[in-house]
Length: 549
Image (cartoon, rainbow, N blue to C red; front, side, top):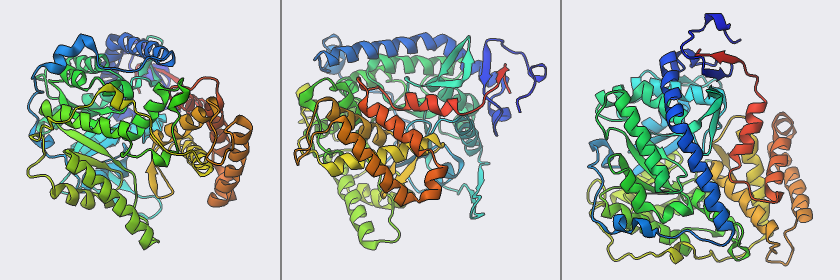
């Protein structure tokens, strides 16, 4: 139960915690921590609103036929020979990074995995229940302190940190999301400022004392002005703690089509705080669909056919590597979502060969490191990059011969649209949403570790096929009646796969309804996590608690 108002420190009547206490609340949501986050929200919240308004304006232009292009106004930045600030020692070698939700067991396994770095995620692989985000901050604080422990409720197995740990990096949520459970002056705090602010407040000094720093990944930026906003947040946070500029280091995920034409400018805005760029290929595909959603000529083939061999993705990779190396910073590769298949040696061998081929191409193209989703893939990815890298990275390989123009980033993927591709989108999209609504954002499905990016591609692709009246390769029209028929059939298949007890205990009907609504809406919603978050928060009781917990 929530504490009574009279028991709470009345530090600031403008700060309201909209939620019941959860494990970690007392340690994480202290009056001083809340005041710091509130200060960030008051100072930068209006600029976040401007960012979102600019995104809507840009999308209206794309819907009218405009396309992202290199900016004339920033040509001088692209042509000048500046570089980012020298990198800290523990970010020089990033050849294998593992990612996962900011949860205790994943934090321990990721830090112990043998990878160069572990990215603790509050974004695509974490369902942002109030309990999850507060526990995640507590787990990060304990990990930095070295006190984190986890006991599996089922097996009784205890988990703790090893002697040699990966470098910790944290991904806050994107600018488009809010944290409804913390309200400042009547408005929900931008989730990005909530996640970053609490992590920085509780851990920045200790991290620096340990010889590392508050390192972050920045998701879903759509241009350099959004990077400028983050840079100003970093400057403000460091000044508030009387820390020198440049201790925060940020790697930006290039996972939107608009950001792809502003890579130089993004690095320039963050040049004191940059740790490079990462090609977020799954969200990039989603962004490609969303950006070009009004164009009937831009309808994509099956998701499985949109691989890194497609020219628009390969062009983005080449441009990212060249841009990062020219500016003296890392170009990180994409995710290997495969997970080991324990009971099928042949299928497991085939999956590992896919990972090897993908990572080999990344390393040979010039990437300085890559992502994996499972600790079992760390040795394979490291072996591949060890065979190519002659030092901690290959930034010295400038790739001057690479030339990529805007048209290369807009080349339409080639392939076919099949009934199985449509069915797979439905099956994976609904099952992922169901798990997300139950509080799990990192979901193993059909031997892949899926996060929100997969569901975003699935539902936008279905929307695109329906909206533009596409047909499948056998001539079947993709219309609403046929889509609803396939949804019903795939739900029967999911019921058979998970079993009646699991199906009835889950949130499959809500997930089905949401996926259907998103796929058949008149306009393509920007992010599925926005309506999903409304459902997530509407099903949890809350209490208004002024000041803190």
